[in-house]
Image 1 (cartoon, rainbow, N blue to C red):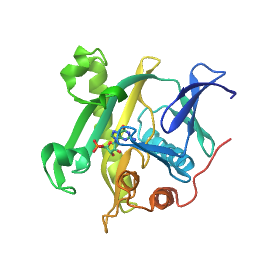
Image 2: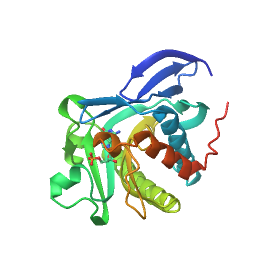
Image 3: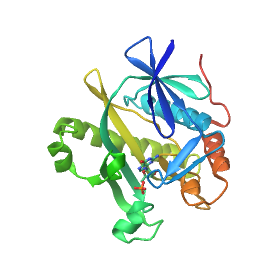
Length: 241
Ligand code: 5GP
């Protein structure tokens, strides 16, 4: 697979064209942003760790019959994925109150939710990714009702699979963000699943092992990312050529 021109540079990832129009290469960077870009920095080894953790989760989901964009890991910081037409919606699934839900509902951080909450955000940096509902998405023509249904079903299924898997590693899946896209007429999962996009707490101590350590200046950021990789792969993440 030949790596060609840069297609897109985001806050944490770069996307490169390849000689196959159906595939692109994602390069994971160490750069980090928070608070809608107001806070910027780097997290040592983050690109490598998020690439390997995402590959781990995408493989787990594929083993449970879920379609994802992941094809293979091609270097410590690069994965080959299917080309997607990105749907401009961020899906957040929450199991425990944290982050923006604290201010929105006034519940204390750590309150378990009786059933998972699924939220949609319109993916638009200039607007600060506002919370939207099904009607907004339909009115803005962002996704059809059938696509939204597929996205919702897949998101709940992903939550069940990840929650069970993480519990085996003594981790709580507090909440996470997903992004989907269209590929050859199918809705498939894209983006990444990593400590940048999920909240992971140690099941016993409640210690935060995710990007909240960066957002809230808690220290030990890179160490937390390393700890998640260690628990998930035991240091045995394979990089296929
Ligand atoms: P909250 O709405 O509480 O800030 O975020 C909920 C969950 O979605 C967290 O796990 C958070 O990491 C993830 N999330 C929401 N929006 C974004 C985003 O724009 N970028 C990243 N990396 N994660 C997000």
